[in-house]
Length: 361
Image (cartoon, rainbow, N blue to C red; front, side, top):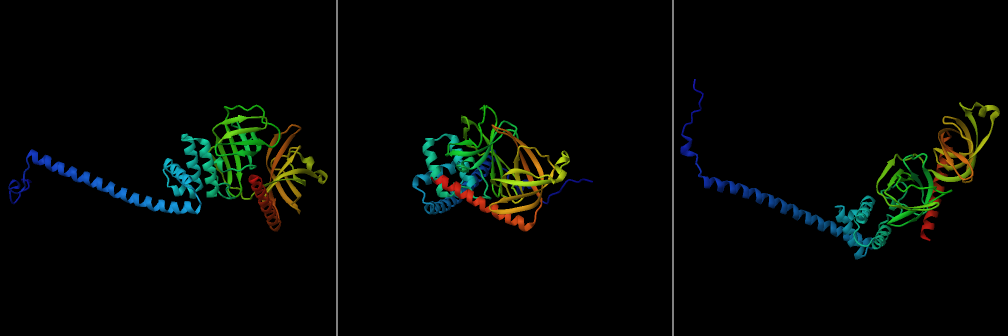
């Protein structure tokens, strides 16, 4: 059987045939239509983009007026926004965009850095980014404040190389740390450098520092950084303190003599929170040891608290070798815990206000 399709009429009589020139003209028309469609699409998007920019610029101008920004400051915000491909409104309204814009602008090395630093400092104050509130994330070392407690880590070993410090000076180009006790010793400027910051209500931040600018006996000047890692937020805010805690052991597997005769011990509490304390002593206790603690904090007595040793760190000073013990509360009456948390928050607010008053001087 012949399967060839049979048409009721010859196609050649009804389907037009085109010459080579006509085919070229047809292809040209198709290409022209496509090009025109592309240009129309780009024109339409450009028009929409301009309208959106006009709207955002209007909102930014209103915001700039509310923040009392000068023309020079507004122009500088626009330059930072262009570098990081953001809207100027993002720069003055979100800390992350603000810090990214500053870092990118200064990294490019455009203009006089000292003049840019003055503009940035004024913008930071007007935008309210001069002091991150407890619980607010930190995106740059430029957001830190003078007298703030940090730990400087020299080398790759974070546990052994931590040096408790405070920020002695900070501007938009660099910042300096002063060690709390003793000196840094010999500093290898080629070694890895980082700083660790505790942000109350948020977490622990470790910033990788690009370089050491100057190094002295107990001070070091560092470059700013926006490269960081963040650990999970602490359940309780910790505050530094200096007081004596008394305790007796109820479990001491490695040194059972500590249990005999209800022996009493004492050590210095260097920080406290609603979840535990840090004890500093010349004697080393063992991880897993359990104790019953009593201490006085902010005029209130706290007693009969069961705790366990979580971690032990050795710290060397000029005069002696000390051991830092992180103690976690295992059993504490909830009313007692609430009272301790209130006292800790009150002490934290006092510390913040004191740092602010020092910074304003």
